Length: 279
Image (tube, rainbow, N blue to C red; front, side, top):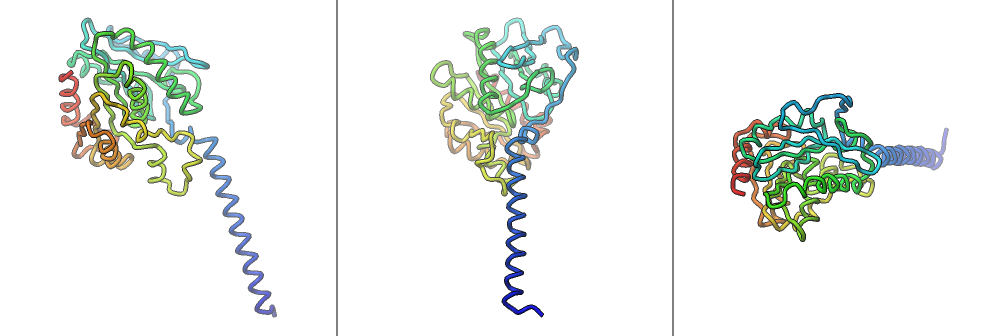
């Protein structure tokens, strides 16, 4: 029979081994997350190179060369537009699923420019960093902006794209600020959002913090926040917090709307439409 002290020592050794194994597995999970988090954050739909995205005579396919890739975009061009909406979409799908309501912009008399990120749709390459992603947005903007001098500029971002749109508008604040920035289903930061859904992940591991909370206060031109009240993916408290950080912003809450169905609500379409008409 084992002596009591020997039994205690055996149990301690077993506990230490289990703890060491748990730490090893935790470290392995964090290492995998560091290198593979793009597969969790980005969910592109890839399209064949010959896929016809432009199916109307006033919609044009555009290619934008960036270091290591060629980006695909669609550009609705009207005869005498009031301006342009520079649209940065969410983390899933492609232009085939996002560029679906050009009539809305025709009625508002606004051109629409929408970009597919690297690896989305017909865009080549792959997303490798937040800095690269923001640089691609700036490169696309540099192509669009000269075409609309003297006209109204709207920077629009939805979900993932809201952080990119906020960053672009903040960068433009001291030179050529947009007439309106629209952030739909926006987050304070991807780090905060990850903490809400995956509390076990330390923020230091996240390579895409996307800190909208640190830049939204630099947007001094008109800012409209729109959020579905029933959004469980990015809770509306995120937009509430951003509104507090940018007191000049307007916040439109869409009752009954969740994360992916805002476009099905007249309150969203009408509220966004009023903001465009007011420009």
